[in-house]
Length: 191
Figure 1 (cartoon, rainbow, N blue to C red):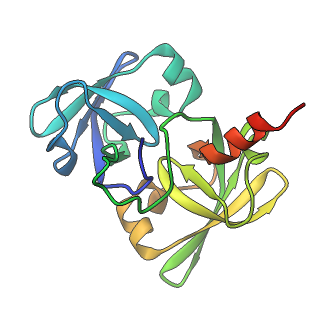
Figure 2 (figure 1 turned 30 degrees about the horizontal axis):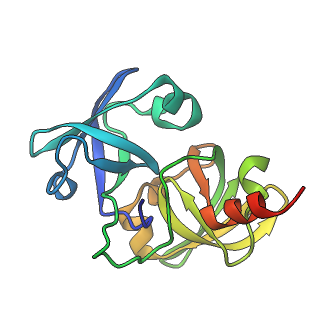
């Protein structure tokens, strides 16, 4: 379980169909082999930690359902270690289970902040409500508005500086995870 509060922006050192190696410093601490890590919103398992980078195996299923297959050497990635019972929950409950891949429609800068517009497939859009939570590439955000299959989120300067979203361009794919509570509520409603 994660909070969607990115701890570090890592850089892909190498990416193959089966494995990703990410150069990082902060999250290598307390990330032994077998630990979970959110990489652009996808929960992966650490298979090697050399103190300067983390290595992750990536299954064909994960590549097919996320943007991880698009990563190449030099790609920036959002990294977050899992929440503990002693950790503050600063974002919202994020599982690291990508619901769908969306597309950046626009990034409109307004002063030092920005409004990001994302096109979301129905698998995610149906769970979005104004002022509700959504994870975009693992970043916990609040839905500012929704228009059909697209939604807007406001990005503060800090988020633009320390996550991949500050480097987003129209057409870029992003991993989307709807709020888990909304999914459970839907599952409890009799059909």
